[in-house]
Image 1 (cartoon, rainbow, N blue to C red):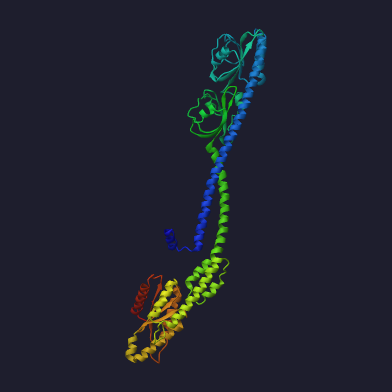
Image 2 (image 1 turned 60 degrees about the vertical axis):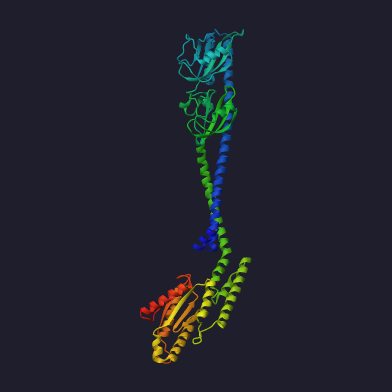
Length: 523
């Protein structure tokens, strides 16, 4: 606190400047804190909304995909029942496979395989398949072993396609197992999964992908990543444990994402809908920037209004504070009376100043009556001048010191006698009283040395008054004697020094300078 006071004094901060600084600090702190809070709330809300939307979207897609898979299995089941009525009827077999492949285009390929793993018929016909080969791929082997509805995990087929195989067993009317009918989905080609899921990036690079039980990517907007095993994804374990939910994760490429996920019940695949966090934050930053601009304009308007009100409140105090250092002015009471005391503190301050001004003037009158004066000239002597100096310093009233010396005064006494010398001193005292204002203090220091205390900091006014006195003295005569001249040295308190002795020393040095530079001048 002491340091703040020192800084305020060094910078000469008045009430209005202090209030302005306080308002700027308060408004700046409010603006900065508002932007920080806004940044936190908007980003938190966007994160929450993104996680919720991605979760709902993933759940919806997972449910739709599960229902679609169920419909596809029903199609296979119907065809299996039709083929099972007479498994040896090649024409019926070909007709049903052709119908199944082209009726809905749900499958990239459709095959009928007997229980010995031999291909009986397939569509489309341009596949590089043979009816004389025993097929032992993962999907076919597991379907034949299980002899029931089956959906395989993704695997590499003999056609070099990464595929998912869906199969239904074929039974004869006597419930004898005859083989199976299969529908395959080629993951690297246009397929039913890519139709259900969007293959294009959505707003702000939000996208969706699907992974199987072995953490391999079944579907991804970037087809090059299909079949890739996911690693270094810190949200994967959580997604494997929960049926559905949302999570903030860093993917295998080191990018932070906001993800929602849901499992497809029939195959236990995981549908993941996610959005890069940075992309979302870019959107947030645009919103924050616009909001911050609006807040800034609001706070700027609020600052201007508060500053106007603060100036209105502080103006009377500011005016009274300035007048407190000018209580010696004769018109100061009238100026104090003109201040409108529209609130209590101003009224008390104004009353105190008026009382102080009256006391000060009464004190001056008392000093004029009781302080010793020079008996010859009627001017104040050194003792009287000292009392005025103390009063001016106490009131912090800036003033000028004029030291005046009659040039070659000894010659006057030696030539015309001391009586004429005394007449010259009285004549100079009269010129001094007539030349300076009523509230300026005129003193005789001793011999031919005089001093004037002018209660003003206006250098031009001081030098004009000194020059006016010098000319008046030089142009007048005493008792018919030749005119005398004076030399004057001027110094200012507190500009030249805070110490009165130093101020008088400056004035004395300048007086000697005037003497040395030819006399009859002001320095």
